[in-house]
Figure 1 (cartoon, rainbow, N blue to C red):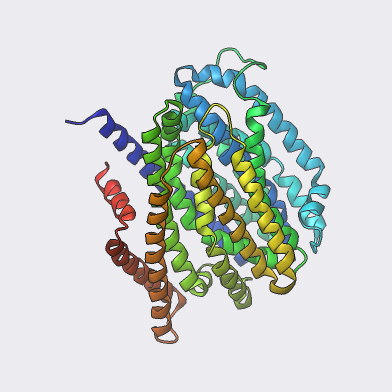
Figure 2 (cartoon, rainbow, N blue to C red):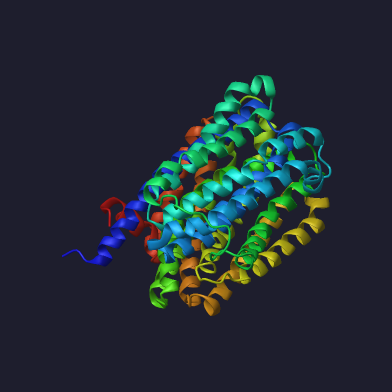
Length: 505
């Protein structure tokens, strides 16, 4: 007999599969976008200028899509599913007004922002032009995030998952057609167009499942500045790690910011897949916490931690072992030279060491924003991690250059992850630190062994094999060895996840 719990698990798993498939499609287009960016423009002062301008949409996405609209609006809609239209009536007008004002401020203040982000940039005028084009994303990302939050709270995951797909279609369409005439400015214009597509692709589903209220209200409602302030401090502190990278990278040779960006984009692909698990389970976690179901919340969070850790660590082991081959296959084309590929691969190996920290922060931070009152603890933890990043960069960049920036990033975010894990136990969910620590240690040991065997296998491969063959063979070896070691060490989270996806339960 099928129970309510079984049906809920089946619904979650199907939602996870839909979300993974659609989001991965968008992410693959994002990868194509980055590959074309490298092919068309390489890694030089021009791409550095565009990436400085891209700081605006990156920050906006982190702040409003992954931050405010996810952490604040999903719990709010989840607690008021029967009054979703009333929530829209009391929150959307004020949200829209704030977003319009912020978007206009970014456009007007573009010269100041460029100077703050990258004072040593070779072509600030180009960066200012691109920043003004991308300033609209503050508004459009905010609206897209709002629609996504309302739909996910109502267990509609397909449309929100399409935002990455729509975003990258916009970027690719303009970059492909206009790169010859506009240069890297075509990419900035594509960012603006793609952000509009993010709103339009969700609007029909929003109107069908949530709907618009008959009367709007400009006052009242549950979303206040006091609720948003802790979340804004946290998300801006997290995004400030990118500010630190671009600030110090602008003083290094042209192309340094681009090498950092390409390394991060490739390395973060597996992290996106891993965090999709939490995207689907967050509404359930929010309801568990709101209902005082401590044991259910603990099991949900510990399960997410183990699964994400397993996926991320095996991916990091592979990237460290086969970074040159991966970068050569993906990026070494057109204007992206062999020297650019070598520099990017070296940076990616360092950056991969901090991938687990990034993923765990993404998992752990969500739990702090499940209650009606947002917590300041994530902002404090992220502030400490940011301080670690900045201090290490100040001390080490003069001697270690770009590698110091990547290492400082990893050290800072890992510090934050540890603080969040410790703080979570006494504030929100009483996760078992010994259980989580033991599981993480077993997973790390299996991943390290798999990475070492993969690296040795790569050295034994005959000289002259294509990079694609080496990368694929390396992936098979790392996964196979990890599966064997994981079974021997009692790590079965990935196997269990695969079985659930396959069976639909």
